[in-house]
Length: 633
Image (cartoon, rainbow, N blue to C red; front, side, top):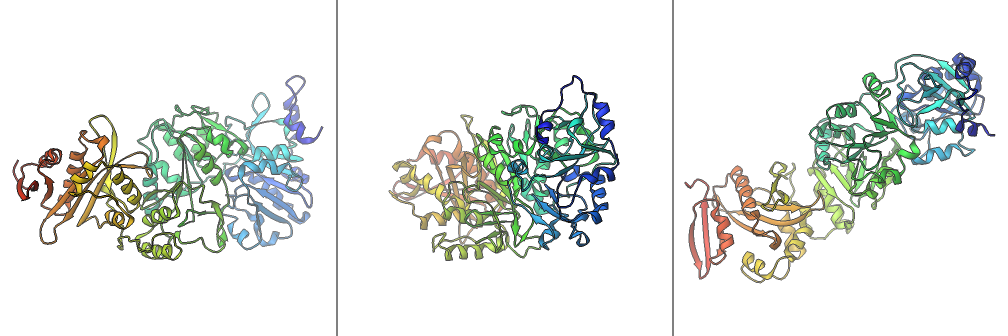
């Protein structure tokens, strides 16, 4: 029987003395590392589970070795084996480029193998990538002779079964995690005791832009959703914005301290999960010593190997799966780059796996988070086309939600024209004019497309509110956006002839692009419109519009309101008028006036809710009504 088959089928309890086996396999690190020979492939345990004692022992043998390939998922340790003095001894090969190996990869001293993480275990059983030796870190054995892979199950478990030899650092600081993390002592060839605190990784605090993106992204999370938080400080910052949610679940590759905090706060319970209910399903952990202690024998967590965690079909078994991940660039057609930007920076990781899994999930949301500019503010990360050398991690067909600090847009099923306008609307304001010009040059948008330009973002997010109609329908009232052009056209074409006549005083038959774009591109000061919408963010349906145009030579504004026939009589017109009036007051407007048919009792009734108004007959059957906000009731 082959070695890996033996490891898959450990000996039964009967006749097996694991304590004797443990003593027999226990040895010094130097002796254990003799298993590594010239030309071997050696797998190193991942991230904070890296067996540093064994890695150092391997480096100590460098003068005896040649052309040893080091296979690694993600490196957070010192990575001394990438230094030039080891060039003829070791060659590091990353499946995901960590911060400590990025320089070596981009200077040609280390390799990078692009691969989906759920496919790595399959690679390990191919002769060209099969490890000769796996260096791992485990907990001490329990009374049954089982050690735990602890905070690093990921691809490590597959490496153990594929490798010809397994060397384990036994560390009392390694927690015993629940799930598919256990190995029998007889599945390990050499044991080296070495107690030392596990490597810690504390996410840096998100900056102002990162927190703004996190606040926007948190709007997409509802009670009972199942989350995946990608590797990176911006996705991680989303967790800090979810303290008022309830019964969230998790199916994610990496967990850290914020997860512990949300569990203790009753935010993450997993009660509503459709797959592995009540469990935080993960593959590895990077965090503090407190987090590692929290994981020890904690049944709330279920550590599973990468072939399960990253499998899109498994991910999709979680209803309402919401996956957050970061990006380096997004082009105007919706292509996403994160693996490289001229220089290789990271890897596929779980980005596309989770995007596709979330998109297949019932009610799922794949979300891409990207700052609008580079750190120095000199370049836009929303770009006309991806830069030279940029790797496409997600295609146009994979992308659903994109979030910057300026808002959220939904791209899936949208035309190139709609995508370009949507992405320009959440780009940094100082780059929007240039992006619009490039979109015209590429024929992505109409040649006469307009967009109100300013050095700062004009959109008044503070004016967004939620409300409930008389029949219990929950709606959102918000300022109109340039991306509402198509929705506004759909709203217009849903009107009855009577509604159109009451609104425009004549039978208007069409709302072409040239008209619609002028109604959605506003300065939010002299020209303002609020829309009432239903449906999820990015896919809303307009059911009502309230609009004002400020008088050129006065302090009043003309208003008009239109409510979809299906929602008339539910108080929507009064709600729109109330919020529009509150907005107008903040802009220094002193009152509203409107034109109405004298027979339009519904319109006059809504206008009357502002308070006393005076009327003037401008022509037979048409009234001009006016209310000043400072009038006494």
